[in-house]
Image (cartoon, rainbow, N blue to C red):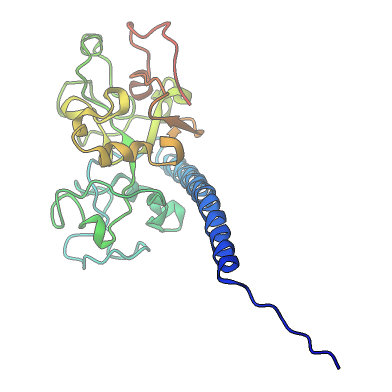
Length: 282
């Protein structure tokens, strides 16, 4: 009876197989990473739409008005444990608290789940003031539910804007007039160009106010120009893109190096110097 001998791999053949597998992994990993990043961007956009629905529902229950201006990052009430639990509960800060995150007012319309305010692509958000002050605690400790910045644009170094004596798009008050912080919201009907006015966007800051020379991509976020990780949060998705939710409820993408930003997107009306200028909305 013949004996069948099974030929074993030689060392060279084994090394070739390992090399081929390693090459295939190297080729596939970037594609998998891009697919994952694209999926995260889609999740972020879906969350933004859910937030807008909550925002619109709140207005429907409040005679067409959204909540008053809120500039900070807290979700947890005074005296409650600083536990970054994902579900909003009895320890939630009151929406009217001066340090509340803007999303607190609307989270009840999304089942009370604050996780919708944490973009999956975010690596950091404003927590520099520390626990017990303007935020619940550091990002690294899990206080991650402040990744979208609301349009509270109220300060500008643009001389045309200062001369125009225009009002803030969503809150009562004028540009560079002072005292806008904490002012009441405007009515839904007062938003003049909702399809081209930013409501909120991917951002490092919780409130986009134009403070300190610019915290918007108009000046490439020059308030944070020394901190590229903070600037990058406005363009946190694949190919340096960012998501924007507009006041009419549609979402779109912008790109760091290609989008031509227009101040009209924040103020809600075109400035005289901008009229006739081609826009760059993604």
